Length: 353
Image 1 (cartoon, rainbow, N blue to C red):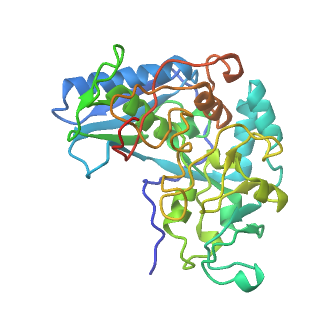
Image 2 (cartoon, helix red, strand yellow; image 1 turned 180 degrees about the horizontal axis):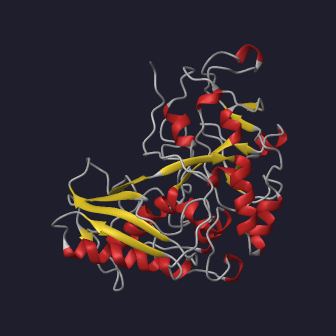
């Protein structure tokens, strides 16, 4: 039996409001035995950056390691994820909203229990002559199947909006770094020309566990016509703010297609757009995972690549996205220009030009 390829572990969870004993965000590490002390200190420095700007009373538990990875891979993250109804997530996000961006974002979410999803590559496509299995031409999926009614989010993101216990012993994910590269563990005086910014890359990888992910990567890896639209129950919180002029014109709530068209980050379904674009997929998109900002535009922490000698930065745009998917940012994104450092690359070794 064919199975959809997906990269991250999944555990189901239900709505569970829980009192917290934490003081704002706490990132708790479980380091692999014998981890390089410099790497451990670098992970903690990256955690400190997130703890300084995300003000949710939750604890996030991460396994961390520093060992040889695949060629070309700086770091990788596997996040514990779960599924909840779209209604349940929207209601939790609305209850958690407290800033201007939150109010705009939640007021523009579909109030239906089922999302209208602009997608392609499934076993069903009603687009006339193009309606063959696996067609690249997008269509509006509005049949209210499982994929229209569910949200798949990281456990850490669920904690932030009250859908999982604020504090427990559940692992929120695992972050591994490659020991095969030359790393600079102290970016405060710049990054060596032949090295990568360890703290910046760690900040990036932790950012995935906190919720900057996209289910489009699953569609992109399986855009072959072998699966019905109902099989793609991988819409992530950030995908609710992924749109295009084409998806809006078609009457869809989100643009979830795996192709090379531009996909915007927008709080009102592309009635207005920010200057920020998302990456569109390794296979059928622009060559980078959709769980990132567009490459080479210096947008923020989830840029998909990092260069040697490059100091990496958390930006106001990053915090804006984390804010609307359920984290409480300090200060509100509309009142900051640039916060701390932190960005990172995932799977590239390109040199900074």
